[in-house]
Image (cartoon, rainbow, N blue to C red; front, side):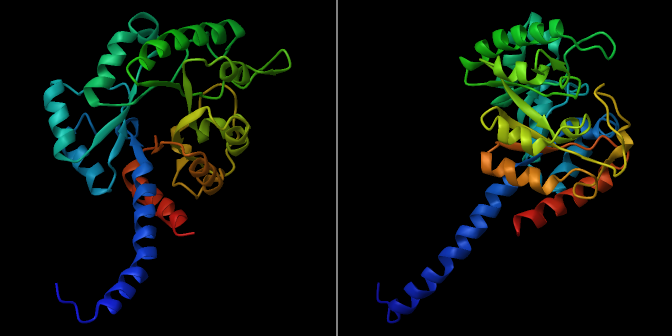
Length: 287
């Protein structure tokens, strides 16, 4: 090929390299952001195809399901709707009882979606009284189920809800769980770490290898927390507008290489607030 201005082309190409690199990095960062489908638990029963289309319009690709099944559709029909909208379930939810009694069905569900993660959101306990016995049972169940899933290259994670931060023999029950997690890891919901008075960033730094997934959820300013695992869903606000330092959490999560950060907004304003939360996250990429 005859190129009379070859040197100029080379110079222009070299000048583009930093731009291409930055765009690639931003694309990878954006790809980490997903959505927890429980956020749209009120929208899905009304219009499943339309809700998936709405998620697509937000530019979200990665999803975590929320224990709500396929809303009356067959699995193949549900899979087709996901595919048509360019969506992928990368993390599959599992009730504690299913992990305890039939972890193989959880694994089959994960393999159906090609998901590499399974997450459990709740450990059954009596009222608000979470005990060392509840903790030890959960550790046993999670390690047994997690060992099974490891054989198929699927990682089991547990999502704490705030009641795990109670003291026991000089440490917290949460510390005990983490130190005993031989075959499972954790998903941090920043709301449920901050709500009981913990610092999410401090926990990420304390256990940098234990958190593989994250829920990004902010809390309205002035809300007083507790260790019960209960709160008013209407205190969920646009990321960056509440009392949690979401920017600091995201920065630390990126340093640690957390695989997926799922926006979760349980409020009635979710459809309005998710796009605004995405804009906030995009603003962090530019800093």
